[in-house]
Structure formats: C-alpha cells, structure tokens
Image 1 (cartoon, rainbow, N blue to C red):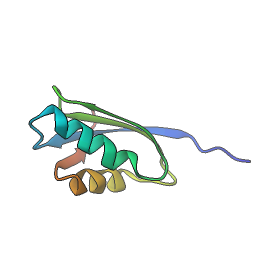
Image 2 (image 1 turned 90 degrees about the vertical axis):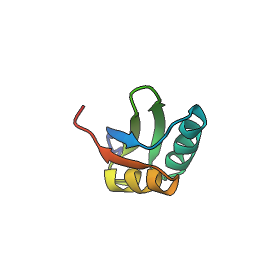
Image 3 (image 1 turned 60 degrees about the vertical axis):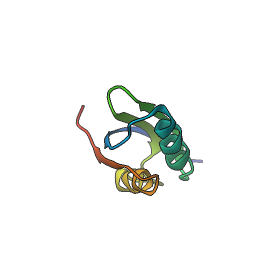
Length: 77
C-alpha cells in the first residue's frame, strides 16, 4: 500500500472578526476528504492545513473557507 505525503498549506484569511469564526472555518475545512488537521490562528489570520495533496488541493481548501463565508488565499509565509 502506498502512502502519500502530507502537505502543509498555509492560507491567509480575510473577514473573520470573532473567535467563533475560527470554529466555523475549522469545521468546514475539516470536512474535506484528505484533510488531516486544520488550525486557524485568529490573531494572525492564518489557516494551517495538513492534508493529502493528491486528494484535496489548495484550491479546494480556499473553496471550503469561502463556503464558510470568508475569503482566503494561499500564503507564502
């Protein structure tokens, strides 16, 4: 059985203003098949996602954040 490598993608989010927004984003992104963990850093507006890049892409992650009602984009830092 082959195991694919886990990728960490960092997204920069916009538009969330309260701690409960964090839970909404974590829940929405965490539902995606292939996502292993989601950590939203409220103060820095960063979303760190550990995922299987073959099963879920950065675009899928951005779309999931959008579905939760927020804008996000992949970040280099």
